[in-house]
Every structure is written in C-alpha cells, then in structure tokens.
Image (cartoon, rainbow, N blue to C red; front, top):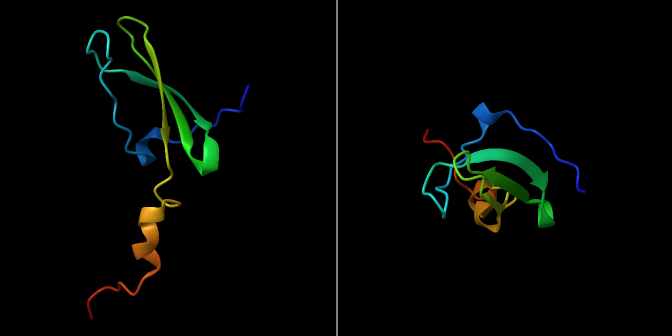
Length: 76
C-alpha cells in the first residue's frame, strides 16, 4: 500500500466534488503520492459511503506553469 501523506488543509484549495450516487458533498479522506509527482485524492461520501479517487497534478510542477519562469515582473 502506498504511503499517505497529510497536508495542511487550510493551505490547499480542494474542491469537494458531489457524489455521483446521492449528490451529497464528498469529504477528502486521504491524499497519496500519485504518478509523475501528482496527488491521488480519495473522497468518501458520508451519506452513502461511495468512494471516489482522482489524480490531480501539482500546479507547481504542471506544464502549464511555464509562465512562472518567463519574463513576467511586477510593474515598476
């Protein structure tokens, strides 16, 4: 079983998806290391106990973060 790691919830904006079975808000149960430095997030529904897993890439390691290394600077 992969090692799980916890993160300070107040530091991460994590959307709580709706359960596909009962449409209730799911709770984040755990975050594990996923493939290619991504997170494997496991959500559980407190109403019907449905479990949903999703892979979320790290926004700081994303291919979309190239603008951070560009010439963008604060106005002078």
